[in-house]
Length: 128
Image (cartoon, rainbow, N blue to C red; front, side, top):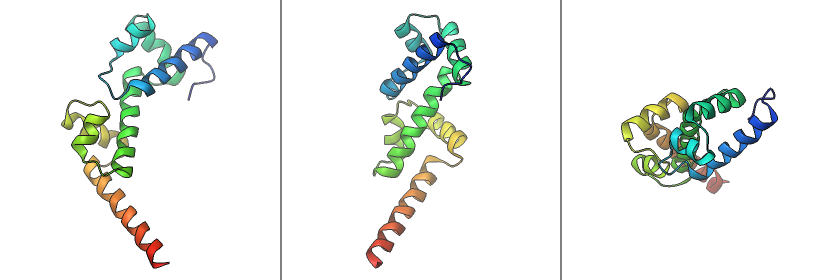
């Protein structure tokens, strides 16, 4: 969500950056890539984006990837390594650390919990 105190130009740029990240988070995407795409220095872009969202671009990319990983681990029969790769992380250990930081549990535990919940939901549907 864009902060209400952002300037008109800032919020437009921020919204375009968010859309770009949403479309490209699964690829190799860095602050430098985003800055080059929009024709600004990395420093300027990060300051503008942080003012508007309260979050640096790199942290936003990580959050977006973690959200996508949660969806893959809960809605699909994908293993942790597959989810890690599918959302743009190159290092399984780093992915796991970031997942724990943002979600509070390891991706494996999250996946197991979601699978138990899905099984319980199917069993209650079948019993009814």
